[in-house]
Length: 96
Image (cartoon, rainbow, N blue to C red; front, side, top):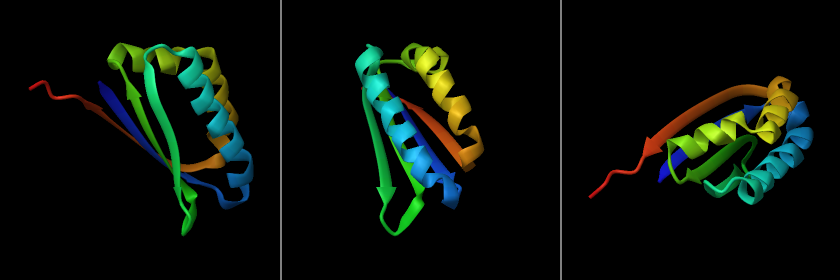
């Protein structure tokens, strides 16, 4: 497995537009990308402009395919101006 965690800080006046787009991106990733195994969109009710993603892919190639997909590129360009900060971290599963 290949895990991706992303933390966004969304501009306060843009969170209402960001969340529907984010949720649609997650649904499309799960339904159209065979290598996307999990795509959770999370928020802290006390910090509504912070959005946390937890994504699992079969491997790095599946994540790369996600980044290259038409739906992700459209989403990414659509929400770019809504994002104040974005932190992306990736983790490869450690084989036992």
